[in-house]
Length: 88
Image (tube, rainbow, N blue to C red; front, side):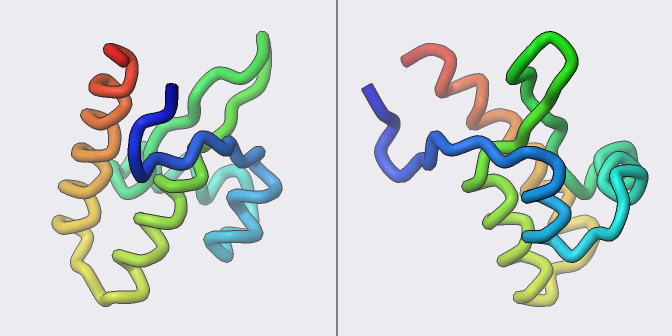
């Protein structure tokens, strides 16, 4: 069963960098540490990925000129939505 409006595709780090314009893994992890990007989800024993809809939402907020505080709130909402999805 799929959650309405929720993309189930997972992007690997190289795809995330291409989508966001980040040039390095470190810049993504710095954004995560600053609360400006969602944390990855485990897709293997030693690999992480990011839900495509979360990457799109963060990109849209940046394009719309949202402040860092607003993006942090968005990231918190996206993480909360993951918890809701786990109850489906």
